Image (cartoon, rainbow, N blue to C red; front, side, top):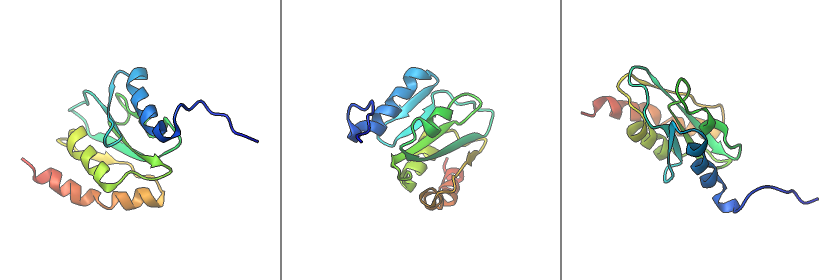
Length: 129
């Protein structure tokens, strides 16, 4: 039996889903190159919360980006975790780390391996001027 889906192009599924988020949530913006959905104007008076994981369950984590929820979400490709570089770029370029950043890591092996880079990135964040 053939499965039927509303997908224009399977190779562009993740990017299409991420690009749609700002249309449904105007508080969000998307860094397509790094697959990061983030708040346009995060609250500077609070700790920012970041999460993410593999794609394939859209809108998944990116749907939780919004005021009072996640400050950013990093997406990998279909059923693959985001890379350590994507997580680093999110922490350096897309969220304000002045009050701190809480990174919520799911219990999937790839997510945990990507999270191993977070302590090193955190040290770089505190040392930058």
